Length: 178
Image 1 (cartoon, helix red, strand yellow):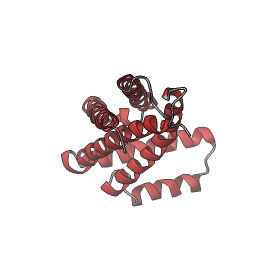
Image 2 (cartoon, rainbow, N blue to C red):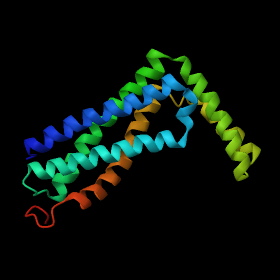
Image 3 (cartoon, rainbow, N blue to C red):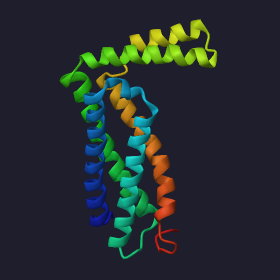
Image 4 (cartoon, helix red, strand yellow):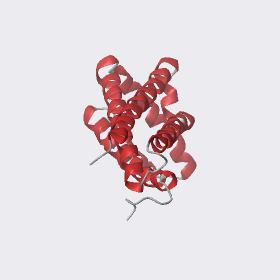
C-alpha cells in the first residue's frame, strides 16, 4: 500500500510541475514562438523539472523520518511525473488546438526551416530531407494524438530518469529494499 505522504507529495508536486512547465510554454508563446525550437528553452524546462523532483524527494524523505526505500522514492517520483506530464500535455493540446490553432502552421514552417539549415551542416541528402519534410507535413506533429504520444514518450524518459533519482535519494538501509 502506498503511503499517504507519497501520494500527497507526488500529486501536489506533480501539479506544481505541470503548472510550471505550462507557464514556461505560455511565456515562450507570448515572447516569440521561435523560442520553441531553441535548445536553451528545453534545457530550462528540464532543469526546472529536475529541481522540483529533487525537492520533492528530499521533502518526502524528511517527512518519512529519513527512511525512503527505492520503491517509495520511485513511486513518489512517478506520481509527480505522471501528473505533471498530463497537465503539461493538456496545456499544449489546448494551446495548439483551441487557443491558437494557427501556431501549428507557424511552428511547422519554423521546424522545416530548422531542418533545412541543420541538415546542410550534417550532410543529409536532399532526398532524405524531402522525405522528412513530407512526413512532417503529412503527420501534424501538434495534433492531439501526437501530443499524447509525446506525453507517453516524456513519461518513458522520465521513468528512466526516475530510476536514477530513486537510487540517489533512497535511504542507505531500509527494510523494503530487498
